[in-house]
Length: 356
Ligand SMILES: [Zn+2]
Image (cartoon, helix red, strand yellow):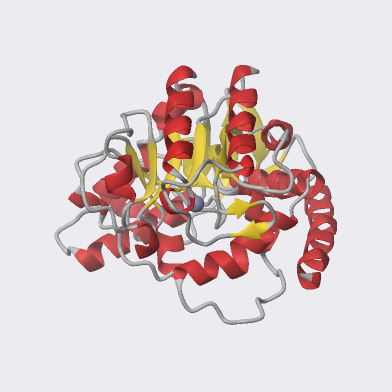
């Protein structure tokens, strides 16, 4: 019986999306996963500049910390503001006091000024993808903690994916890539099977049709929201970790949802399976064992309790022994100031989106 757990890890986040809440609705109602990408996310990411990105990342990191999530693995894209973008996110996370593993998601979907929804594997690498690779390399060579990001196979040429895999090998890290999230990316397994290794992070794997090496990150809330289907991660032998895919970083909430979705698929499953997923990304942040979270409930060390106790709140957070959240309030930054600055940045961003 304990009020305390270790700090939690969000194994797949998009800190750039924190300001999406309240954004102007798309002109057409998206009716498929690809259409959601085209009409929402690929409009938001091109509208980002480095200043809006900073406040988006700061808000997302602050909300994570106040939910007991002391480490984030982030996957970033801002096609009109690539250079230096990972430093901006790193600075925001450092100001908030959250550990971060960062990557820039390279893609060939931008061909000059034109957005392509599907990219031929055999076409040459675009300039945008080359710039994305350079941003990953620059950040990693400067000592940044991260991986090499790839958006997804279906928006990348073979040359781009192979270059990302080679860069990751050189930098002794893995590739962080969306894999078979929707049916548009159902060929991902075939295209990645000779490249993936244990260091890779395979995000979603909903329609993955074969075994690939790496840690699979399950994002149940996002998958349901995008209506892409159930990943059923227990069908793989890989380590499975939990992410939010940008919908906040309340990992206990995500775990509860992952559990009921798993039970819907197989009533013999137990919460222990999902609470293991919750800890499987600790390997990316070995120092997380020094972070502690005190919760508003006295049996947070029991998956059977937490799975059936909605509304457990994060009370105190200690990072490496330092009290950074006390009674729900951050001690090192002013949450109201972060929210105010983020709201100003959101107005600027939403105005830009309304003009498109
Ligand atoms: Zn994602």
